[in-house]
Image 1 (cartoon, one colour):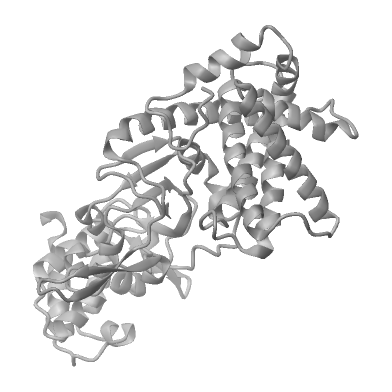
Image 2 (tube, rainbow, N blue to C red):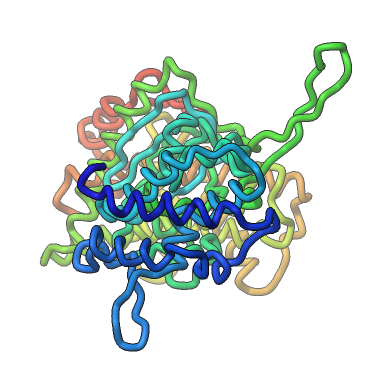
Length: 464
C-alpha cells in the first residue's frame, strides 16, 4: 500500500469527519460536502488515472473527473461512513485499504452469472466452452463484493447465505457496462437461456430432470455484484428447534436436478465431450461451406426453441395450461430443425421426421415409441396452429405427453450431436439410409454405444 499512501491517508482523514455525522442515512451530496472529500478525489486522479481506470470517471463541464457517486457508492465507502456514524464497529484501516484496492486494482471484466435451480457438490467447477459451471463458497462470494469486510456487518450477508453453494453458470461479457440494472428482463438481446444455450445445453443433456435459470446477475468482481434478494427464489423449511419447537428457515428453492458427488467426474467428462461437439458444429458458422453453415444454424435454432420450452416448465406437473400447446410447438420446431433435409418436400416432411427420429434409437421398442411420440406431436401441432383444441386428451394426459416429447427431444439432440460432427454430409440422408441399411450398426449403433458415459445419466432410455 506504500505506493498509494497519500490516497489511503486522504480516505482516513475523510472518514474522521464523515463518520461523525448524525446516525440518520446520509445522501451522497452530504458525504461529498464533508471536509477532505476534494482531497480524496484529487488523490484518486493521481493514483488511478483515467487512461488506466476509465470506469472510475465521468465527464463534467467537458472534463473527465473521478465520479463521486462511483467512489462513494460502488466502492462501499459511503456505506462505511454511514455504519461508523451509526456506531457500528468498523475497521477504518480495512476500509481505507479496500478503497485503495478498488481504485487502483485492474478494472474487472464484467461477467454474466446465471443462477441455476439444481444442486451440485461443493467445489464443482466444470468448463463448458466459454462458460464455467461453479459452486462458490461464502468466502469466494464475499470476495466478489467491494469492501468485503463490511458485508458481515450488513443484512446483505444473508443474501449471500442464500446462494452460498448454489450453482452458477458464469461467462465473461466484456461489452456489458458495469452498472446496476434489472437483468432478467433485459431488452438489449435475447433472453438469458437463448444467449447462453451453449453452456446450458450439456447440463440438460446429462439428466432429464429439469434444470432452469432462476436469475441472472451482472458481476464485476471486486466492483459490482448486482444481487437482489428478490431475484433468488426461496422456500420455507421447517426444522425442529433445540427445545422441540418448530423453526422456519428461508432457504434457496432448488429443483429435482441433483448431481451426487460420486457422479461429478463423469458429469465433467460428459460436459467436456458435449461442449467439444457443440464447438465442432458451431465452427461451421464462420466457415464458407454451405452445409456447415446450415448445420450450425440448425443446432442453434433447435437449442433455443428447446430451452424456451424448458424455461417455462417449472416441473412436469407445473406447466401453465394456456402454454402447454406452445411448449409442444417449440419441441417440434427443435426436432424439425435437426432432422429436416433440404430435399424434403410437401407431405413427406412429417413422415421423414418421424422416421429419422426413430432411426436414432437402437431397439425396435424404442423406435416404435419414438414414432408414436413424434406423430402425436405433429398432430397436436397441426391442431394448435389451425386454432383448434385437442379434444381427445385430458389435461393430465396432455402433461404426460408433453413430458414424453421433452425427453424424446433431449435424446434426439444428444444423438444428433454424437453422430453429426463425424460426418461430412447432412445427417438426414444417413438416417434415411440407416432404416434398412446393413451399415446401420457401424454408422448409428456403434457411435451411440461408444459415447454412453458411465454412470449413465439419470432417466435415460436403456437402448445404449
